[in-house]
Image 1 (spheres, rainbow, N blue to C red):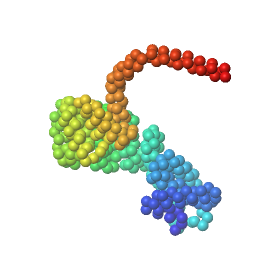
Image 2 (image 1 turned 90 degrees about the vertical axis):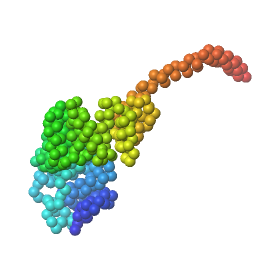
Image 3 (image 1 turned 120 degrees about the horizontal axis):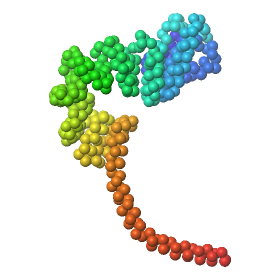
Image 4 (image 1 turned 135 degrees about the vertical axis):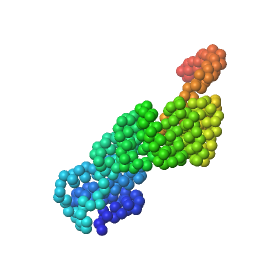
Amino acid sequence: MNVIDHVRDMAAAGLHSNVRLLSSLLLTMSNNNPELFSPPQKYQLLVYHADSLFHDKEYRNAVSKYTMALQQKKALSKTSKVRPSTGNSASTPQSQCLPSEIEVKYKMAECYTMLKQDKDAIAILDGIPSRQRTPKINMMLANLYKKAGQERPSVTSYKEVLRQCPLALDAILGLIECYLASNSIREAMVMANNVYKTLGANAQTLTLLATVCLEDPVTQEKAKTLLDKALTQRPDYIKAVVKKAELLSREQKYEDGIALLRNALANQSDCVLHRILGDFLVAVNEYQEAMDQYSIALSLDPNDQKSLEGMQKMEKEESPTDATQEEDVDDMEGSGEEGDLEGSDSEAAQWADQEQWFGMQ
């Protein structure tokens, strides 16, 4: 068992800090002595080191190491001959047990999404041949495409996930949202009904079907019934609470919405629920508590743009009053300006006399 095997075993055991220290040391030794490790071993070290950086949330550094690993793998695949390592020859073929290149690219995409670089994440995943894409790769691609407003490739990726994993409920939901975004309500309804019939009536399927019903004015009442059933089964199911709040907002039943959201937040804290509660409180002129709810939402997710917009809107609405108060203060201060100026002229004359006196000394 060589040193690379030990690093691999520690990585598998979740000893990330140990992997980071040892792999960093070994990579430094390898840079000083290029013959120390074979190309496959160098590739493994780079991947394990990058994984440890990913675990420590150092995503930019992890991307750098993953990139180096892929370059090493590319050079490795160009040659059929492998340089022997110095005193570290493995008992099994070195081509075996190598970290998957596809998995490395997936990890890179995860880093890019954490860095808010969605275009780079799409590019790295899109470069993987479609026949080599695993369900999680297709799922990430579908979500990224949907976020970018590219419904067509998103639908394709979601369908591929469902082909491989027919009961992947999130992929069904994502696909339905894509249909709704492109106004394909009929396709969305067919899909939602199929899921409902397949999985039965539970909070998730009821909410899924209600989501589609909300898009058609004719089926609003059906959506309300479905959401009530979902919340009866799971009062804390966030997606059902959000959709019920959306329905209550349309009906301008803000007090009912506030009660619903307070109940949902009694045993959990969620950015979206706090933000929607803030919106409802604004509607009933409870501005201070609305501001508190927006603040809580932003503390849970500092990047929540809608909560930030809600706060900014409130500040703009309050600003005319503030401006009026400032004008009143300016007027009050202005009444004493002439006296102050006269006093200052007098003081200036006294200082001039004193300066003249000092100059004569």
